[in-house]
Image (cartoon, rainbow, N blue to C red; front, side, top):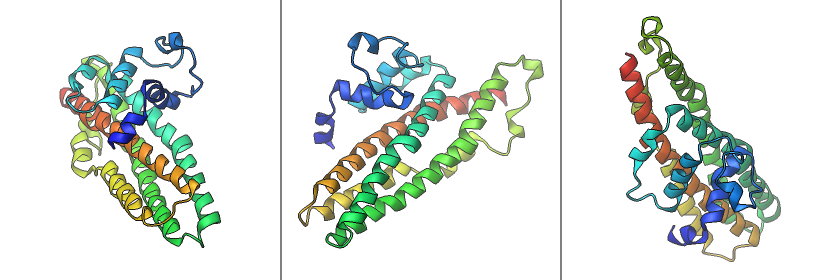
Length: 232
């Protein structure tokens, strides 16, 4: 993935991050530092950009200064971004590949099908988090704001953070396996331009998903677990 990291410069990385907030027309660098562009703490965005540029030795503790609500809001925006923009874009490429090259490049069409299979699994994964994990964390946040004598125990829920940790599967690892297989076999024949575009989309999405998983697994979930333990 080194070549891909080299390709993504600071401005492109910034756009990649803030696109999920509905503003992909960032032209003025002066605007980029202000909270008027996106409804998110600019300092948190800077840390996320650092993560995109270098995930090794990333100081996760620096994100602890932000509220769990801010981290949750970012990840929720990311899920919306995946479902409404990134996945539909890739799906459009898949439709084009199948319709134009399904007969002449059957291997490439078959490989694209593997990603489509993965996409279905990913959407199920996201829906589960949106239905169970995120609402539960939001409930913890709301309970924590109540006076101690009025709080209801988080234990009353059928869901828990530890339960999520125990059953959580690394969906980003599955995408890495799929994309590696696609790259390995697609190099065996002449690859048409639409398929090259598809490959680039998959590689970028693999990068995206890995960063998302890092923030979720190493920042949000530990913060939620600590909050849950305090309330219980």
